[in-house]
Length: 231
Image (cartoon, rainbow, N blue to C red; front, side, top):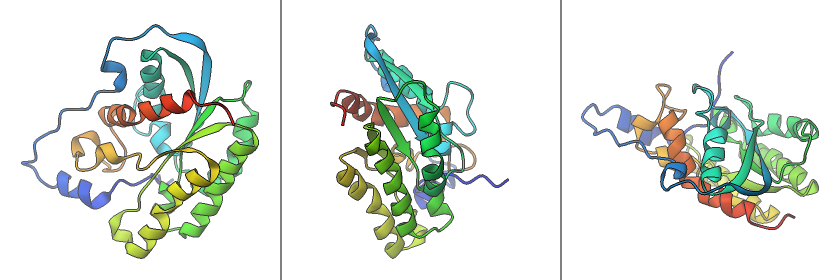
């Protein structure tokens, strides 16, 4: 079965991968490694990771994916976080919208927060941005209905798709985050751009070091969202 995945800014990455003289960037360390661990305190905070292969840890070993590394980074800050990985490789926003209610109903305890990363596969398949917006809007509305706060991990269109497509697609995430009162990470994969050493051989998915870089760039945002009052 063909594996679809959220794309990085493809041309920038390919340019980096094609240069054999390009210096290797030292792997970015996760925030969990930046300072001595703080004692974990307070009630458990359940965080649902809902998305595609970027959250499912495609091509990585157990414990190397974004949810596991984010949990470690949050706990290093003293936050009693427990990540629940409900990501499915290959998901489009429409597939995510179709399975979200089931995924939430299957939880013994309602999540306190959701981290959502979807839309990249829509772009790879060339789906109309209007369809992506509609499905992602439905996903965020379901979280609204259940009073679950959301950190929305944004995506940008690959430049080879053209300006018209990019203008429509790129506007989806900030517009929906504002409409639903959610926290936005403008471009989830920004730490990987022009750093081919942080990307797997498929030139799409992050390595374990790439995941650490993505965690380091987003842990502040997620920790801040945990501190916000519930809807």
